[in-house]
View 1 (tube, protein in one colour):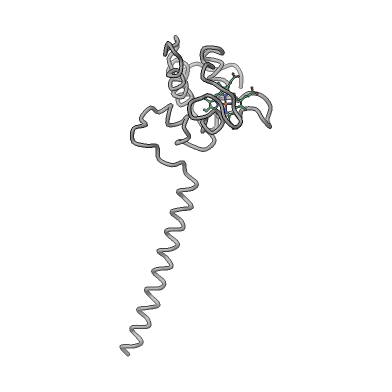
View 2: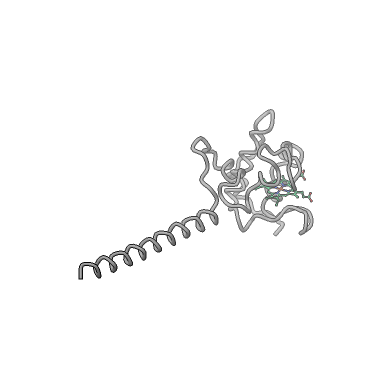
Amino acid sequence: MGRLLEVVGLIDMLNQMKNYKNMILLFFLLASACAPEPPEWMTDPGEIIYQGFKSVDSNCSRCHGRDGRGGMEGKNIRNALRDLGEKEVFEIIMFGKGDDLDGMPPLKGELSQIEAGQVIDYMRRWLPDGSINTSADSLAGSESGKQ
Ligand code: HEC
């Protein structure tokens, strides 16, 4: 009898271990599907999005490099705000640019207008003079004609 209990206990334990393993597996599956947590010092919401901690699709740095100087697919956008203006950059973020294959994908399904404004706020930090007229809030409020 004691022996039987031992065996039952062992089977039980093995079953629990299996569940435990499944949970670990599930955890890793979930963790790899979600974007990683940003480091503690990164508090700028625009930077968090730009550096890819919101989602893979809205990870600007993946294509434009961590510092905006360009990378694998995207070009240097350090001076995009100065050269194109905020409205244009906002529309590029929301609606994309260029062709489907090697252009920039539209991100309006990924980012709200406010979030796009936050990314622009972050990009403003790259400019030597640091600021341009409109704020992210007013940008987010304005409807763009292009849809
Ligand atoms: C999948 C890669 C990819 C991602 C992600 C991406 N871009 Fe782009 N981006 C491109 C490519 C490619 C172009 C060039 C499009 C063209 O001119 O045909 C571009 C163009 C731009 C331009 C215009 C540059 C110019 O001088 O014409 C801006 C500004 C820009 N991206 C900002 C962003 C921001 C901000 C994000 C994140 C919210 C982002 N991009 C995410 C690939 C990407």
